[in-house]
Length: 257
Length: 316
Image (cartoon, rainbow over all chains, first blue to last red; front, side, top):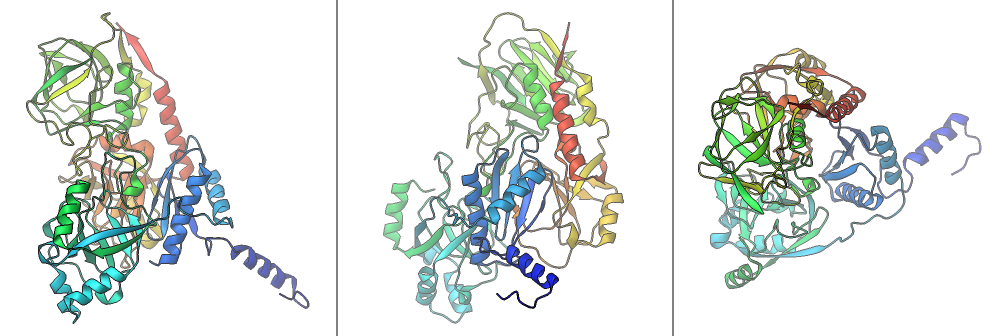
């Protein structure tokens, strides 16, 4: 970048520009503001994309490394991170400063165990009552839907709404399907479903309005375990089609619900 | 040795075992739960010499009746529900002794909504993810993840000493925060800029009525509709005390059992120091919200901690 012939204000603008868009791991500077008096909200641009969601999870990983006293936990979402803090241990201003430092760091923070989890699924039949509907609605064969759904690599954007419920991004656009007009009173635990452009897995029996493609014998959430949640925010997920006999065998082994 | 302390004769409207809640798992979708009025819970425990985070019984409104199964010390803090041991009234914000065979009855609402009953050593509870609090939605923690039913029995460690422990009551100066129960202080919400100035003005001047369908997850705020923003927001973390505005203009105040993530815009968030006050409101009560600064919110919280430290007064 040439400085010759530039006015002072132009040079300042460049320097400011360089500082703002410095090669950090987090891209553009996010907005930081209070959400109540015990949470700091760090917001990246308002879009649901893998890149932005990745920045959220990398900030969460950075917080885990930093172990800031007074920061108890954090809630990662699509494009924001809610950082819970104890005001008697750390002041708001101090926390914001530390967050900005982490955000401007070039350290390639990565989730401690960034994993790819294979989720076996029995598609269709009694396990996937909406598989045919989705196929017909998109002018596809049932096998095409299974192939498209199971070839994609999904990311866990966040875990929320019920313990262990993963919001998965990466659904092939062609499969995006509207929710049911009226939710089912009972969606069985392990159901793999589509809601809009999102894919999700119901950890427990619950009401639900998403389109059910199949069911996994894996247990998504078990309070007895030290790591109760099978999937973590930021993990990758791939679905592997299995047959019903394999479902029953695996279900017995993992003690699925 | 764990021994039975109470048998439930009448469970009351909603009696659940609670401590200060589940910390550290909101990123996995686990609601914090815990006592709606954490201030009263902490004092109830202090009255019987427990660590503040010990599992106690949260009793909602009158009607609960418990049979005493062994002599025990009892601490009571929170709403005055006209508690009696047989026919003898017992004071709230104080400890006392219950004798085997007596009935502990919560007779009538005098003030507040929720009261906390503690015994030395804490009630036995199902601990999940580090907390004995009941999670009603997921049916875990506390007593089988549900509220008390007739015939249930609550247990606790046997008394360590046979000596008659002293009588204590909470220093009245500690109860300052409950004085203006219908004025709740809030911070501007993280999405307050999505609302028009007129809507924000209306929120800070309107009177709201706590709706009948209010519960531990949240209170419906009725009587005044607000203009919800047209644009949808991307779901983000929901703090306890958040006031969300639904698409139809209704406002909801999120309480202890709230979901961790939400997609409705938050016009305001209750300051933490006023959560205990909010916990003592009943359906039908009318409230107004006053916007304060972050510094004032933190100061209020620090003052509340100071009041907790004021401690207990010995009484004869």
